[in-house]
Length: 345
Length: 206
Image (cartoon, rainbow over all chains, first blue to last red; front, top):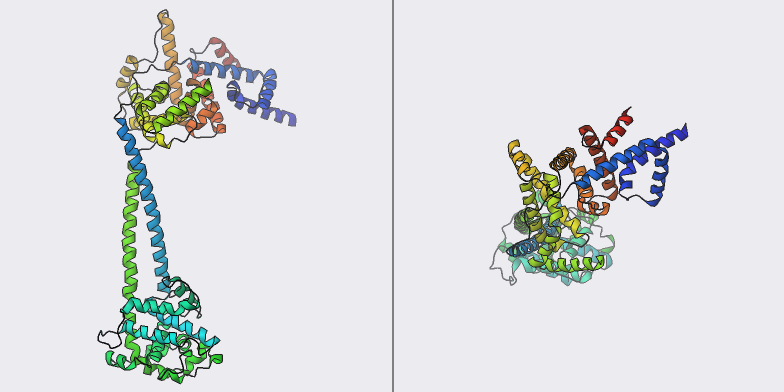
């Protein structure tokens, strides 16, 4: 019973391999198996004879006579150069497509980080830098790095000040302020001031303060600090605009964090907050400094300005994104075209 | 001897890869017969086969810088079969009238009559040739190509695998199936097979 089944399977196997057997393309051990089977199987013998006859017929087919020679004219050399050009442009376009795609991905992820507030925008970066630089400092040593916040507070108003006639204004507004804002943090950890990464990384630390709060924190801070030397100028420059509710709301963790580290010599509402490093948990501070904030609201035009100032920054990103996107489309179009035109095998 | 031939070919290929047309034409002279023959068997038409062959050599010259070694014959035949199948699809989109095909086949027979060959024998050979070509045409494309390369052009399984870019096992099974189908076709046609085989077949069916 089983041996019959096995025999049948063997028979089928041999039948399938007779074709390779006549061509001598079977392994030696299979050749032995085929021969052994052929000796006792008439059907396979006939099958083999038929196959051999078929192959013989095929072999007997003559090659068609060559109607003409197919040698190439020397003018085909130009085709050779052409193909090299096609190949080169294809490679260049492919590289360009990859590069532009990478740039676009970087830009878009940066934009996404900005949009979600994980990475602060140019204006709020300054603020949040302070917002976290301060608590850090405060926790370690309340007196440390007095000069830095001072500088930062200078930078902030300058950045936002609408009037060019402002007395202390001697810096190019946006960029220098930004750089300074970064420089604030850098001495502590980061070696490269031009890199955005430090700001982004550090921005994470103060318990992921949402962007708006961070901005507000910045305002609060600058309000406090500015009072030392900038306040009068700002009051002149900026129309009083209390913005009470938003500020009340904004008195979350961030302002507290920011104000926590305000230097002792700071005059003004912020100074009302006692800077006792041990208990400077931002949440607790938030309640205590609820009052000063509306007064600081005078500085809020700055905040409004900064809110209004944000879109240009993101708009620039979007513009670059659009340009890159257009470039990518063009490169991909070129790639498709060249890929289509270039001769293939 | 074979080794020197292979080395010589490598040198010629290297020169042709640099754009040396004369060197490439040496390769054309070596392979144009088999290339045209394969194209002819795929297409069954002289003019289409000529177009396919010429295009194959042009493309081969252009693509030669991308040739990365291996069997040059298989490489050339791969280009040729691709060109032939392009032609085939072009022809299928714009089929010519049957009369055109008949005229063409009559005028350009692939068979040459030997001086001493009796007319009957020549006619028989011609007939067999036509029936076999007809049988080849009934095969699926992939099986047909393997059968042509193996049984008409005499390529090894390895060369066929390189030409058709399939595995050795696939070549083996495709060829086995193609031969079985062609065998059945020739048996159905009857008279063209030796009577002994016809008898064998009858005894098989009994």
